[in-house]
Length: 263
Ligand SMILES: Nc1ncnc2c1ncn2[C@@H]1O[C@H](COP(=O)(O)OP(=O)(O)OP(=O)(O)O)[C@@H](O)[C@H]1O
Image (cartoon, protein in one colour):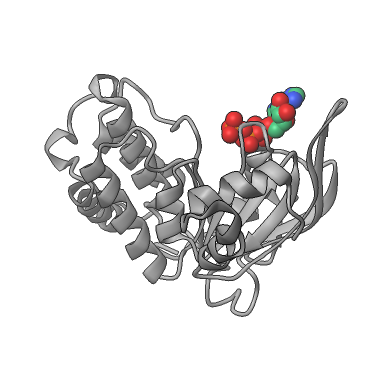
């Protein structure tokens, strides 16, 4: 963690534990079974690409894994901590949701200082980290301008920095490159790659399949609430290539979510 905080639980204390584990995880909204009997074991320091068509249950899954939404049934843990223990789980997490939680009236620097304060980060080191990350992501020049004046892509980048600020054990990133131009997208991909080299586990949900193909060690495909495929990007592509005739994750995804293959 950056710096060590909370109950002291961190990557070293959770050595050997899966970063994310789920068993029979399900969520029902009335008649809708949004997530059905999901099992996951995601090792520390890996990138898990989480794919699925609109309405497949990705956001619902992420909200259960980040302790924001109680499951209807099943269990899940992050770094060995059950998701029912919200305060403890939150200490391990960074989360970039679909809508980055930022205040329009704050500057990026104020927003990130506020996030650091909430996380009880040491101010002298967090100020340096904020500047380093803002520079890394090409926002340093506008760091003292109000977020209300930012483009959607710039807000997304602030949200990403906010999610990574405390060097989390596990980062849940929902569409980190959505709305970014190719150069900004490349910067974000490189930043995520660097973060993973420090040991952070990334749970990456995105419809931008070339980004998932590049970053993910393992890809899980959710279809109507069920995990219908899980493998390395290469294996998923090879498995479907004879039918699709194309060697891309996008072609594999379209094939898998058309005929709903079993694991
Ligand atoms: N609060 C809610 N109340 C009732 N139904 C919900 C609620 N949230 C989600 N759902 C339903 O659960 C299912 C899964 O939704 P979810 O938002 O998890 O999908 P998703 O994979 O994140 O979709 P997208 O890619 O469009 O963001 C959908 O059928 C959706 O309508």
